[in-house]
Amino acid sequence: MEKPASINQLTDHLFRHESGKMVSVLTKIFGPENLETAEDVVQQTFMDAIQLWKFKGVPENPSAWLFKVAKNKAIDVVRKNKYSRNYDFNDSERMLLTSEYTLASTMDKLWNEDLVQDDMLRMMFACCHAEISTENQITLILKTLCGFSTAEIAKTFLTSEDTVSKRLYRTKEFFREQKIKFAIPSNDELQNRTEAVLNSIYLLFNEGYSSTHSNELIRKDLIDEAMLLCKLLLENKRTQLPQCYALMALMCFHAARSESRISATGEIILLPVQDRSTWNFELIARGNEYMNQAAFGDAITSYHLEAAIAYEHCIAPNFEKTNWLRILDLYNWLCKIAPSPVAELNKVVALLQVEGALAAKQQLTMLAEDKKMHNFYLYHSLLGEINALLLNSVEAKKNFETAMQLSQSAPERKILRDKIHALLN
Image 1 (cartoon, helix red, strand yellow):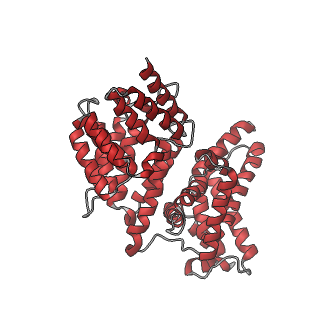
Image 2: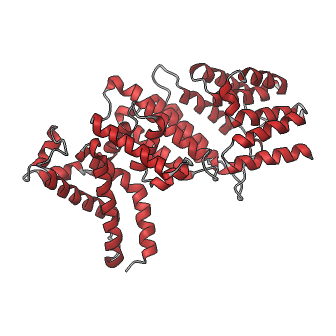
Image 3: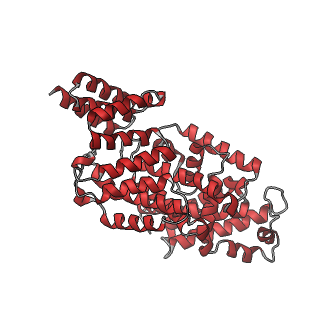
């Protein structure tokens, strides 16, 4: 008999890695309007696994066991409801589920392992429907595809479980009312729909790479999930778009440096003093391969430019020998095609290295006309850096204090406190 603790750990691990696949297949069977039924089947399957495995031991292939049990439960649900109007089995593939003669064989085909990745991709596009808000898209992706619990999502975004539950309820209601199609978009709409998917993946990655809602600066679980979702896009011929390769390259370059950004005690290590020997050069090489694969088509996207910037950092032997002029050119380009507060502030960082503190402060002064900057902690932090370089210690201290008030991250507040302390000594 397995120990309960090890059973629980195993099922937690399997839930994180297999539940998204199972929900995707079940959603194909029941339709997105019955997403809750798909989730209920998965939950019950895992509850059965915990109970049974404690007494009979873990099967040789636990994932296969879970899929088989979920498939059998899906057959039971279909049998129970085949005369009701709860499930729309009008399409040619699912129509065969209504006949007892073809139910089992059709269910076997729908659970074909080779098709599961396509099902996850369809689910991802359904989650990122244009009429669903970005925060609800990410919440649904974390819940359905990444196996996050409501409590984990609430913790990730520093909100209440009640708020997360309401977001999920509203999205499921939208699926029910609109009967959203569970499909990869047609070629005509693929570009626009893919943009929404990439945006959600990148936001998820950024929350993992530089968490704004957690005491941990880096959430490796979120980084891994974002890269897995992007890989799904790259493994399907229809979604092997240049911008998908570019985003994957960008995430590889960033992820390769993530370990060097935090000390053993959880403190931020800034780029100039990071130990570059700890960077993951295998991941950098993989990112470079993705970057080369992104070089087709006739459009340069923000992901291409951000990846090119990240690549320049990755190949620099040290901070001083970084090609800041090239990076500044890339930021100028980025700010033209995809302006954002983050891009504008990063451009000022490059300008600081190329032209010095006075030029950087002039640029920041111009950015101050955008009121959104005033609520952005990075703006005040960078202004503090520049004022410190210009020996304006009083102003710098005020800037760092404002940045501290705006940051929700404990490691960020710690490094800002250190900067204030350095000014006073």
